Length: 514
Figure (cartoon, rainbow, N blue to C red):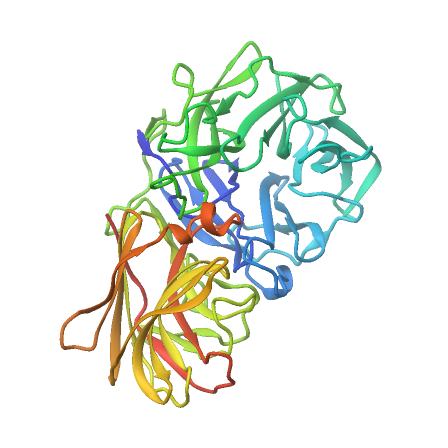
């Protein structure tokens, strides 16, 4: 069977995977998007169906008024004795916590914060005797001597009382001399060896996967002389896939091994879709994992010894989504901790409140979006809005974070009904790129992106009118706006800083990737 990379295109970073019976379960970081931590199910590693979001209640994922790149970092999913465990860090509130479920589709428990578990990027490991160990990262206790001078540590964890036991043991500080940011560690056991696999070098061009092993769980750990065992750091800025790292291992029932990991696909050296999930084959040589043996880099198409069991959607996409009880697809995201009723299913479409917040603020603005999965796409929505006061508007937005977005809107500005394109760019702020006076019962908005150039248009029924024809979208990239998130495109409504009881109705999002 052939599997096309990335297996999850778009903003799906920090993947973690486990196998239970004939099925694989995969989770990703969500930062300050809500709901948090999407969870996917597959029977063949090719077709992934989103069965839910692990953190689907505000009580599970408090984000406050943090930027989009805060919130939930690097989840790990594991299964043991009939229970699923997801452990992660909420850097906005509370630190490291565990949630559990008997069914991976949920419901998942409220967070169990692990007292004394400092640092980020935790993972769990269940040894053969059932003992559970916590592996995570923390600053060098002797003082941080250089950027990312952190250590990986291991400690036993009590899963009945949600606390660490005994003293922590520092076990590894990276493969390279003065390694930067040894993080995202996972612990495995194979053939009598304990293995630590982690990322180091930061999440940018130097990102890499490294491995160490020991006969004892607390070490001493020896690094693989081949470290880093997987990276694209040596391929240069023109290589189409970069920033490879943060991997997790899994084996199928026949004993074949695989790794999921993050990587990015820049366009003109700018990364708009953030970090995506890729797949590699893993073999074992001399007691060490080898990624894509004989190739040494990610493949566009991975050939695996599995039987195809899933099915594509109507557009041929192997990544599909279920629908929550509220009628909203699991794949749709909102911002931070949305107020009750901010976005609801309404007939064949959705209704959004006109909240005072805008996309340029660290607030739960009224937004319901999907991930951008290609640099070549067309997205559109039809909105019905009767503005009642100035600055009430609704339309279609392309969002990277509170630092970078562009939206094409219909609303009331300066006492007049208008369509308007509003851009928010890091370091330069808000600007109106174009506007026209329009009075309409409904307006269809479209964003068309080709490479790093987009056009934004509207149609009131008299034909499409282009408002902005050649907008560079590089300002929406990680390289320009910073952070750890990729772009989403979505329905957006705002009262522009004012209180309002008004709402806007949308027919949904049509998204076609080329």
